[in-house]
Every structure is written in structure tokens, then in C-alpha cells.
Image (cartoon, rainbow, N blue to C red):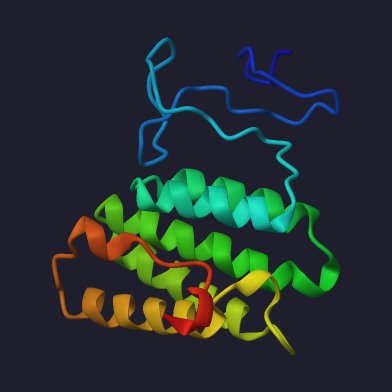
Amino acid sequence: MRTSNGNDRDRDEAGRARNARPRDELGRPLPPGSVGVERIPEDLDLPPAESLTWAQELLDRGLAFNAHEVLEGAWKSCPDDERMLWQGLAQLAVGVTHVQRGNPKGALSLLERATRRIGLHEGPVPYGIDAAGLISYADELSAELRRGVDLEPGRLKPRLVAPPNGR
């Protein structure tokens, strides 16, 4: 399909633009024809536990942008009463992505939004999500960024689910 400026653009059946360009490990677009990291399907719809497991594996591998895309898929398909929680998880992953990209200002903005959304969830947090731990993690990361701390890659791997028995 051609856009108004005459460029060819990959679009879905509804005419929405798709971004098929390859991306690097931090989610930045690469030139067409480059080899990037494996993309997360745009129409991803997994059960919550599978989304959390896959997102955690990606975070542990330093692929926070891809983890964000998995969590975004969960947010787009979750029940309404979980929407803010999943949005907050996705924003946390994007915040980590901004840290990885060397953008502390963007990271702070996303981490603040993440803590607000995660904190809005009322009642027991589903699927073992460690809401309190993630809010604490984001607050600590934000404080370190404000102090100009150079964060080690191992510090950028938040735990999405609380360990069994709180260990």
C-alpha cells in the first residue's frame, strides 16, 4: 500500500501500518535488509502466566524492549480490571529499555508512569506478579538515575513474579 507521500508501507488487513523493519537488541530500527533480533508478533495473545514467563526470560537476556512487546500483548488482551497493571508492567520494561539506550530522562518518565499504574491495581495482584517489589525496584532505579549512577546490566533485570514463599 502507498502512503500519501508515495512510500510503500506494510499494512495489515485493516490498513494499519506495520513496522516490519528489523530491530536491534534495544528495539531500535535497523536499515532494511539487516539482520536483527527476532520480532515479537504484533497480534500476540498468550495466557498471562506464559506472557510473564516469556517476558521474564527476555528481561533476563537483556531484551527489555522485546519483553515490553510481550507485556503489551498481554495488556491488549487482558480483562479491563487488569489493564492498568499490564500497562504498568509494559512501561516498566520500556523504562529499562531507555536506561539501556542511555536515555535517563525517558527512563524516569516511564518508570514513574509504571509505578503509578502498577500501584492502581486494587485487591490481590494476580498471577503472582510482585507489584510491591516492582514498584520498589522502579523507585530505586529512578533514584539511582537521578544520582547519575552508571547502572550495570545485571541491575536491569526486574523480577516480575514474586519467588515462591517470598524467597
